Image (cartoon, rainbow, N blue to C red):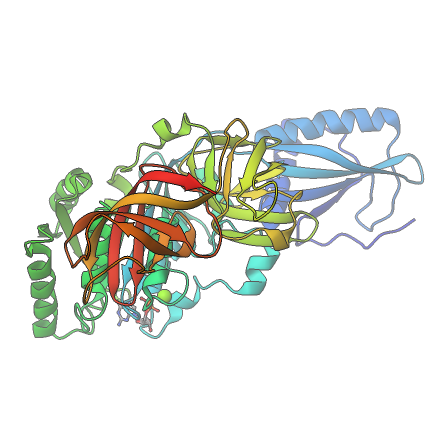
Length: 526
Ligand SMILES: Nc1nc2c(ncn2[C@@H]2O[C@H](COP(=O)(O)OP(=O)(O)O)[C@@H](O)[C@H]2O)c(=O)[nH]1
Ligand SMILES: [Mg+2]
């Protein structure tokens, strides 16, 4: 019997047998396995008992025993594990098909930063120059490297479509620049600190894009990108206001300093510092120049009072080294360790239908931990049984299979028991011991950040909380009418379907040019 002959690329390896076990040979096999795992995004198939030409010879029981013993040693060297998926009869004995997966043991420190700013400010380019260690040509070259296309998303089990990672090792060296190619699994495995850089999905002109990026990711910090030659036009003030209302410390990155004439750059910097110092905003701008500034800025950033300003050229490279040094030393703002001790809470962000796996959902573990084979609740569905029990059949972080994941990590869960068509963004996954209820309405304290006229009962903005986005009507209000800056109690009712929300949670709402923030004080189920 014969199968296709072995391909030197891809994640499938043929092995006749692994009988020799001197250290050198095992290391060689480990390197090869590592390569196959990289090709397969953390997963590889080994066909044992098959010649390079694809002939199914098979192993005698004695050969099989030694082969598996040696394969165990090889896997151990690179933190992988395997399971037998198939056995078939060959010419001389059995042929084994093994599925090998990489396991991550130690967890890198994990921090996420959302990139905000106007269209064309250079957000995607900046992300690309940081994670790919390249320079831009001023004409979209770098940006094109971080755009992920639909077919790519479908093929790979991507963790999050708009997130790219920048890793640092124990010595503070940038891991990305040491790799030939950007590989999330390699960066993840080699880093002791990972910065998740989140670009906005969709059009940044729309506020819903911005709110989705922020509310769905709970970022530690926000980088507000401003093009030096365009200035603070457009969304700068609004993005700043939203970040600060949510208590997310802001870093400003002024890009394109290579093409902005000196007076224009000065004007842009003046505008930025003037806006930052406005009474309602009340921040301390700090233009970061040398090493000392970087350290001072990093030390004080968490207080949420200082706004470091970096001057960058993505084409010439000015300021990129400083920005990387800063990213390497800034502390996480959110103490995920404490959140990990709570029961599991995860909101579905993106949904994939993966061939051979089924439904896969991506999102952030906001609280608790999840392990493979855990039973969890997912819902609310508009059904007699709003929350359904399902098993998590697989977990990936940055394309690496893990057995367990913790609060603060962006992960994908394979949940094949639920049909792809039935899953939507905004569903929650909760610990199986919880007793969740679908929430149809809730009472909150709200503050109007901006409103052109007045708000009354009957007003129906779109609510953004976690990955939830839905219109809700104000059915009751503590005051008759509200204007910009006002605070009041209000009861909202979802207009389409129930969602899952908890007391004390923060949400944002918007409608036209209106922006508001709220804190839930009471929830009501059906
Ligand atoms: N000259 C120059 N061009 C830049 C710089 N940063 C970005 N660009 C260019 O600006 C354009 C918009 O960048 P992009 O990253 O797509 O902006 P985004 O819409 O904020 O994501 C692209 O053509 C980039 O090549 C820079 O520092 N200098
Ligand atoms: Mg972009």
